[in-house]
Length: 124
Image (cartoon, rainbow, N blue to C red):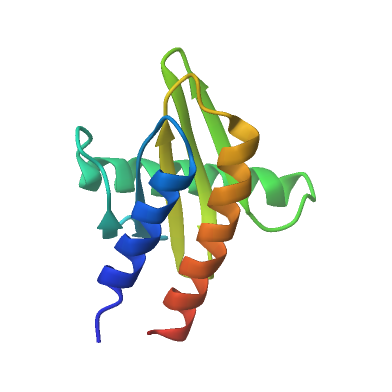
């Protein structure tokens, strides 16, 4: 049974909950796209870049004794890219505009990542 429709539904709901969210993607920890809601961004490339960034973030948290990776936020001149651990096997990546309320993004995306993680870890 595929979980892609359920994951995609979570991504669409996240877009509805966070103003200025351009889209999202869920990928496996090794960079394989599971589902996405991206219009102008190539998901395979973003998944590969996210996997590389998460690899560095995991090493950084471990090296500094901050525990396991949970999330990462990158701010560029034109917006944000946030990555959230989604269970033990996946990562939620959110792409947002510069006017995004980052607190709201974190609040909603953390909840979404938890639900997606449960879907992924339970193999629904």
